[in-house]
View 1 (cartoon, rainbow, N blue to C red):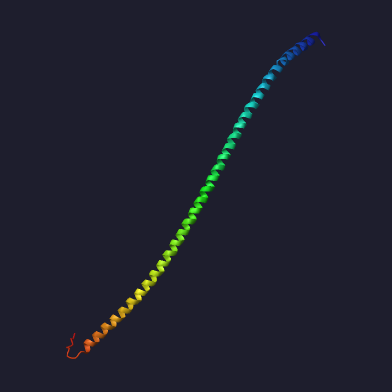
View 2 (tube, rainbow, N blue to C red; view 1 turned 180 degrees about the vertical axis):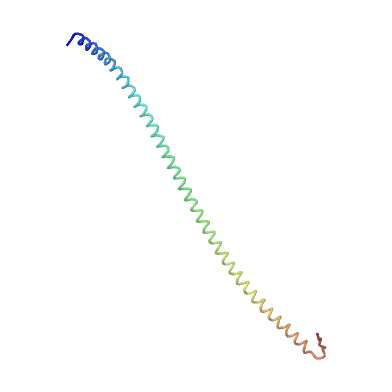
Length: 138
């Protein structure tokens, strides 16, 4: 090996050692930054976790409120259904009664009309047969 080559190698080694001498300080800075990042992420994740827990609690409240509202509406709907069914049954009974009454009235009217018709036919026949009554010719 030549002296020049040895000197060059020694210079190169010194520069490498000088560059490496600053490395622990840089590693310490990175270590601090990683620790800060961990702390920030822990705080952030804790906040997100708390938000999720609050959201879940609110959703459970809303679910309970919704379930209660649905149960109340179902009860109201059952009551309305019963009222409607009762009203329809009453209306059906009234309609049947009116139908029977109407049928009876129509039968009575038909009977009265037949009696009146027979009476009129009888009177006409009596008038035609009456003695001394002049007949009209057409």
